Amino acid sequence: MATELEFRAMGSDAHVIVVGGTPELAALARRRIDELEQRWSRFIESSEVNELTRRAGEWVRVSPETVLLVRRAVEAWRLTGGSFDPTVLGDVIRAGYDRSFDDLPEHGADGVSALMAGCSDIEIEDDTVRLPVGTGFDPGGIGKGLAADLVVDDIATAGAAGVCINLGGDLRVRGEAPTGGAWTVAVDHPWSDTPVVNVGLTDGAVATSTTLRRRWDVDGETRHHLIDPGTHRPAATDLTLATVVTGDAWIAEVLAKAVLLRGLPHQFDLIGGTGAEALVVDDAGRVLVSDGFTAFTGGVTPTSIPVPG
Image (cartoon, rainbow, N blue to C red; front, side, top):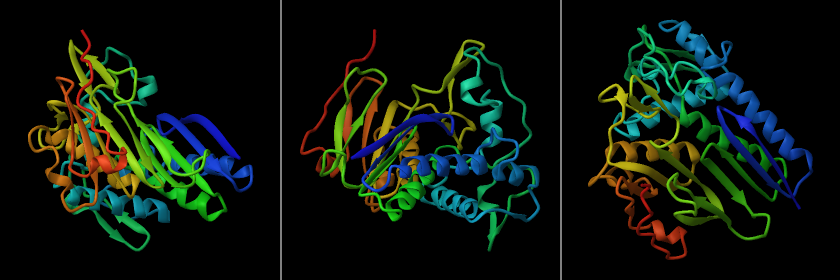
């Protein structure tokens, strides 16, 4: 028997599926997601990440989960060669993403922030973290990915036979699906009414990044939430979507963003040696996959999707 919940969390649609165990496990997963959001959201004034930003330059004691989040964020910065940077908060605000996306107007304005980037100088010691003076911390997608990983661990340890946590496209599964066997995960694209492809997993993660969602307009210019740390602006890329399959959702999330920002023809360079596989869709609707991606699709190789208009 499976218990299923759908709700809003971390600024996204959340989907929890728990197979086996007690009926309370799905509710436990939801409470755990809420706890992590309270600690990690930049849109919650009392969150620990906001405290880090307010007290940048000071040592701040935080929960073990937030220490882990900061460690993973710094590791992701190194892994992606800086394509992921948790200290681009000032750039995000200046681009106009200065409030929860649910509250962001379709036609916005430039935001104001003096915060600068500085991931290389983040310090962690035991249960304390110190950001460089003048920087801010915004976990963004890695927070959703890491939350999915942590909650799957918690619910599996509590006795579930299978569990799936999907936080806005950052998805982690373990154990058996409701129908038995592997979980089937649809890779969706905003231009297509049907999945680009279906991925099969028993223990692993899928994350998707796209420039076609979380968009707004400032003075006739369309912007999106994926900031390129090299330009400090919403990324300009010839890819519209990148999906990464790997063991942990936090790694899948940061690699998906890095692949998307890298663009053609070097889209898969960063995943070499990571154990991850990737799929991308370019702005002409072409679908390209890394060498091992079809191991997760039963050998199916998608080729293209229709481009609107």
